[in-house]
Image (cartoon, rainbow, N blue to C red; front, side):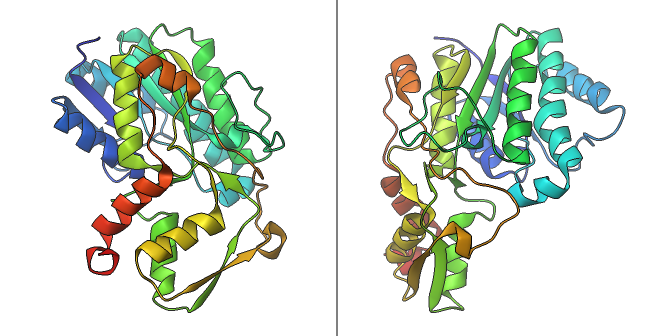
Length: 294
């Protein structure tokens, strides 16, 4: 077991995952400092110097990089912006972490896979992204691995929902206020993941001195339609969730049809079995919508 106790969370102020990491780290006795959009301009020429100055000042034991370009469709039209946050930034953070001998935890995505496999993806499966978003996230992984960091942990995760920032579940429940019928894609299946759980599991991996690539998601699988239907049911929304094919909801980026992640390596490293996504969803809905979910 390690004794890391000071963390820098990139994206800790305002980010969906970053906020959860800040909460979990502090609850676990860590000193955690976070950055927001105004902290560092990652497109500026001096971004690396600014990050170095921040790391030198805070002296973190571990850097969590929860910053990324996650607008999947927009990435198709703005590949340079996606590349900046999903490839160039991780590479920069990795170099700083290496210079200061910090542990680094970086987050990647299920979208590094094509979705053609049909069974849960393991860390041994070869990535084959089909979108700009997926390609830039994979490039970020490769850039970090090329640095040869001894204490680098890459966590692939998926379909995040949780408190603190707009997400798919919140969007669905908000739409239920204004519409009696909502069409949601049924032929894309993945691993819904609750950010507070992901943050807890991330810390477990750090404590277990995990290195390399791990898949960390809540247990089970669901389509977007199933996730939306369960959220509406738990919140007691009188709204009909209708299943539609991906072709009925045109999007600029191709999505993997099946991108469920296998967490066996994580479980072996930590002794922790992720709880089912439905149980996590229930906790989220009941806390976020107490009047409707109870």
